[in-house]
Image (tube, rainbow, N blue to C red; front, side, top):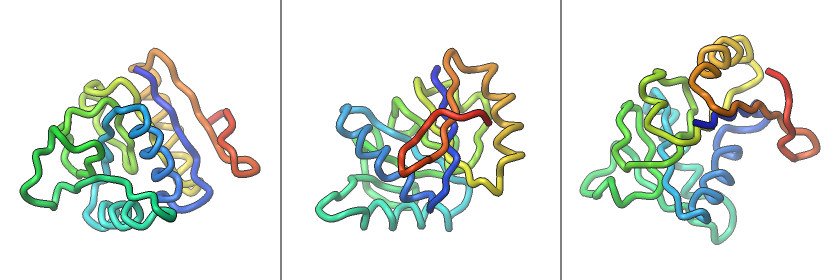
Amino acid sequence: MEINFYQCDESLVKSIAPLTLKILEENKKAFVFAKDQIRIKEIDDGLWSYGKNKFIPHVTVFDKDFELERQPIFLSNKEENSNQADYLILADLASEGFLQSFSRIFYFFDILDLETAKAAAKKYQKLATKFNSYKKEDNKWVKSEI
């Protein structure tokens, strides 16, 4: 399992949206985990309105009448890989057991949460076959230490 940490210097949605587009281009699925409804709503709104002509198909745990297995991007606060995703995008930390359902994990954190991210990195590194940490410099993600 590959785990990647990303230190955000902008809104969470502006960091997550381009990644979801790349995942869709790879014909993979993503599960986006956030613990509370407000954060899920923010990400949901951002994916609906990201960029010109760049609709990002997705559903949330609060949407009804969707076959979750068919959804390429699923936003939820439940630790259950309902859309059988390959990749997990973390807006909040999740249990180690949940992470093991995915081949790649992307954790986005704010610089204000650096201590929490460092503690999580120590714990998650034990699960990873490959671990990377990134931050933005000149609008590009570059490898960094956490």
